[in-house]
Amino acid sequence: MSADADPTDPTNEAPNASSVAAARRADARSPAAAGSNPTGVDGSVFDRVLVVTDDGPAGRAAAATGVELAATHGAAVDALYVVDTATDWDVIVERRERTGEDLVESVEARGAAAGVDVEKWFRYGATHEEAVDFAAAHDADLIVVGSARRTGLDRLIHPDPLPGRLQRGADAPVLVLGPDDD
Image: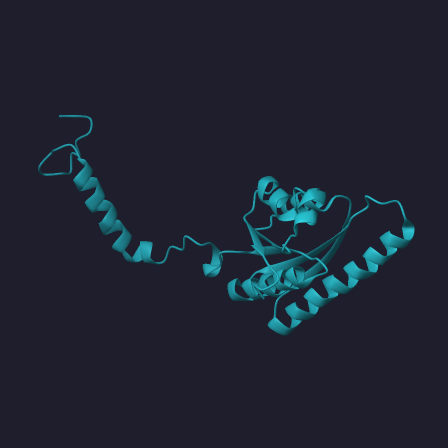
């Protein structure tokens, strides 16, 4: 008797590829397999959606889409605003803080209207680094960020925009939205 043979099999033959495939199809149709859910708990694809807020049409589109996705999948939203501290001028940093506060509060209001839990977060530093670190620390399942249309001059000044840096650095998938994607 071969080591591959099944002693309970009356034919006592070793399984081949077609018999294994047939057994898998039969198992997939079984009632126990029908209750299994490959998308996670309660059919949810996402449990935590990170929305990186930005002051502009693309940022507003990202906020709207992030909250909408979270509502669809029963997920919670983390609204993150990173105050870029590349400049040492207190006046500019304070203005960015006020802008960020308004932005995360608007995401919270959208979430409340859609029945989604929204947590507001602030970080200080380089936006892409802070967003990647935050996503990893809080187990974000999806990162949603806006990306404005870039002109020739903007491409020279900022050759590597935020969405590209997030896509390369984050472990979670990154959804990039333009200003017209709202």
